[in-house]
Length: 146
Image (cartoon, rainbow, N blue to C red):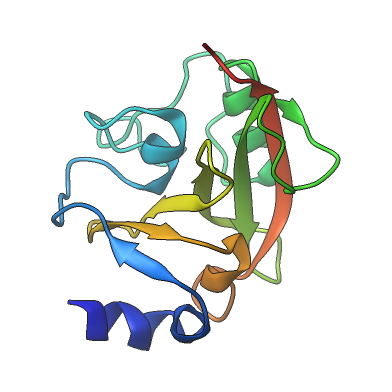
């Protein structure tokens, strides 16, 4: 599986990464970033996906930001490690459509759920940037819970 992940995300070959869980189609990257491994978060069809009730169901950066504001996140100055804050990064394609989310761990590394594939630990948030996920466009933060 590692070979497939490296083919999908070539920048991971230049960065440290580890597979941290088996593939699981019951949750995705947005759910993983939110700390919810029981549902597939996406502002798509309500019948098939979860999205916070008070947030518009549109595939926009604003909608993703609003969903995470409901979890206590606010815009961050940067994705740099600050042990006082939990951070999440929103990726988007060139046209501004959200494609992926990653969550920063307490040690400053990042974790991502790759669609229905595995969760991975990756040292650099930008290691997933590229054709499939685009680039990091927004970083949000909230005070780290004790």
